[in-house]
Image 1 (cartoon, rainbow, N blue to C red):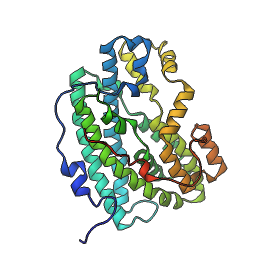
Image 2 (image 1 turned 30 degrees about the vertical axis):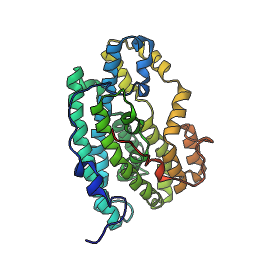
Image 3 (image 1 turned 135 degrees about the vertical axis):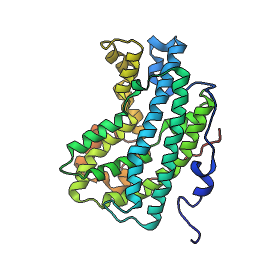
Image 4 (image 1 turned 90 degrees about the vertical axis):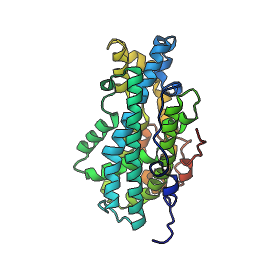
Length: 326
């Protein structure tokens, strides 16, 4: 083969699965960043360090379970379809090969988060049943069923994957910079984040083609699905929080009030909108919001405001922020 150009031309020299070892060791700091877990700031936990650490450990375990499930059950099946040109648009040879690079990366990510999950479960004596099934799995299956007459499930899964890969994750891009978090956790998430920068750029480059290849009816239906997919990934998982609270012996009756205190509705919408900004601009550049009913749907999900102009511009580099080594 001749010299290869494109997003993955340095894959052999830069991807985790090609160049780095499994991270090992114990937990020499917090299992997760407290700033990303509002529940730890509630008065019933604020002065109990042992319980706060346990909440953080469950939040880490939830993230690791989320990652393993997303990569193995959702992203890799989509990458397989792209690599084999079994999607609703023509995939060129470079895009097909790049999908295989992502497939390899994601399998590696699933493996190293699974190893870290075993470490944190053992260190804190966690019950994996408290974490349960990631919220996005249940939401996706419901969306597929509700839109079965208008959209092929394979198309929904493709766009679901594109949303997941282009959203900016404060977990992946923030925790590696938090010195209070255990070095093992920061190293694993840093390894993951470095690969995901390139994956995000791949789906940024593919999105307009995916969108424009839909029929008018499919675009209308998918446009109404996209805002819920964004919230599924960036909004709070109240069922997870409820399960964690139950594991501490908190009564069912008290849980709704606790969650309302730590997740004020207005604050949630603003945070989700800000975190989703690069992906929202990607949607705008592809023309997603040109249909008024679709724009109204995004507005109903609090995803449109002056901070996210619908100006038809997008910057894939927004997600490719530089990460310093840890």
